[in-house]
Image (cartoon, rainbow, N blue to C red):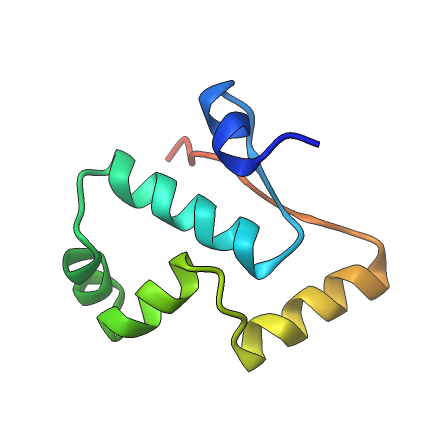
Length: 84
């Protein structure tokens, strides 16, 4: 299985299975947008430390629940650049 960083470099979407893979995707797209954590957190209306925790792959209770639901449904979350 490819790492999230390699998937992005190969032009493939990020496949989200864990908090770590989501964190890597968020960090990748934030850096690609040229934003600091503080800038993105401000735009998203969240605390910068929460964003940092997400990027580090720390599993929040909300994220744990979402990932559990997706797993039980037998589906995965895939992130790709929006075309809008």
